[in-house]
Structure formats: structure tokens, C-alpha cells
Amino acid sequence: MLIAERFLSGAVRDYGKHPVSTDGGTWYPMACQFLRLDHHVHSPLEKSMIERTMQYIKDRTESFDDYFPCRQKNCKLKHVRNWLNLFVEYHNKEMIYA
Image (tube, rainbow, N blue to C red; front, top):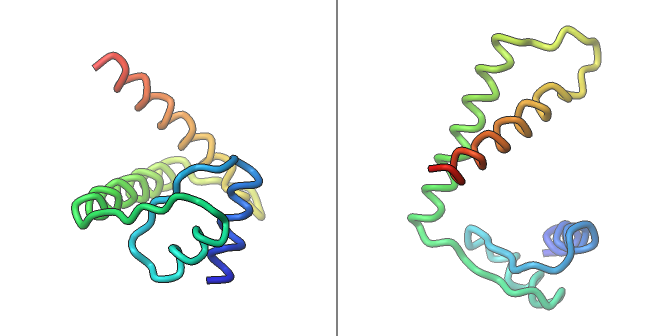
């Protein structure tokens, strides 16, 4: 619970207070209550959709790195972050015009 509270308090500090949605872990409700945050538990359908989306992102990222590997020593994966930002921007524009 302490680790969840520390993580959530850092997120609140950086991004402001927002409702928290979780997978039903027992430590989140107490952490949210302590920080006075609204807490929502995802349904099994929502969890399945989130997991599939994350797997899709991981697969695409891995494919990208296969074709465009970073050749820098001590790479900080900046090229992957840039690609993810481009992917998100493209996806959001496609959703607007769909």
C-alpha cells in the first residue's frame, strides 16, 4: 500500500488530481482513500481490452526496434519514445477523422 501511495502521490504532484482506475489490486483502494482520490476498478472486459492494447503497443515497438535498432552505446530508448509519440499522434488524428 505504501508503494502504491507513493506512486500515486507522485502522479498527483506531476499531473494533478484525477480519478484512479485500477485492475482491482487490494492496495489501491486504501492508497486512494488516503490521498482522497476517486477509485474505479476495471471490469474484466475493460481489463482484457487494456491488456490487448498494451500487447499491441509492445509488438509494434519490438518490430520497430527490429527494423530501426539503436546503435548508440548506453541507449536511453529515445528513438522508441519518439516513435510512440508519433504513433499516438497519428492514431489520435485518425480517430478524429474517422
